[in-house]
Image 1 (cartoon, rainbow, N blue to C red):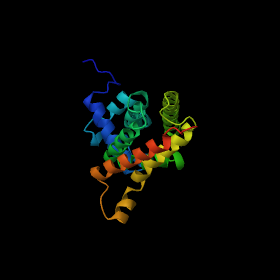
Image 2 (cartoon, rainbow, N blue to C red):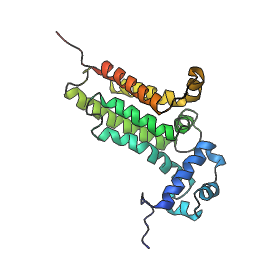
Image 3 (cartoon, rainbow, N blue to C red):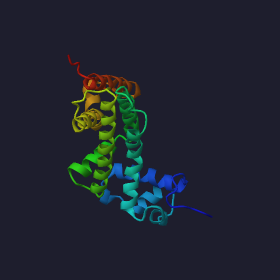
Length: 206
């Protein structure tokens, strides 16, 4: 049987990634074992070595598969206009609703330097920074956003609006006395998208 270790549609590989996500989100990296992941995925432990090389390789691929859909947006048509930031925020909120602990995992690795993959995550984020800067340059050239917009400030603003609600979700829900469900996040994405559109609008010059 012809099996390619990197084939994204392989069901065993998919189960291992799903199990790894659940395990790494639920506990510290060093407390998670490959045996635990394999058992949760109903797979032979040798398949981790076959597909990913080792636990760290599986960890990195888990992060890549979660972040890639968000980074790929920067190459697509979604942000061809400032209004696309609403869709981008909607995609982010939807992605993180299914993985509510993922932003905390990224923060733990980057800010607290806990667990492996710090350089790997930084490389992914730098990829997003470079692609985002190109997208901002395109929007400026088309006159859709103000020429003075700093792409790094724009990126920080987006990350703040995207990550903070998910990082502090439990606290916000307790304070508000209601759930940040799909309808709430849809309204939040729409509101924040309008903030972006207004803040990026070209300045009128006499």
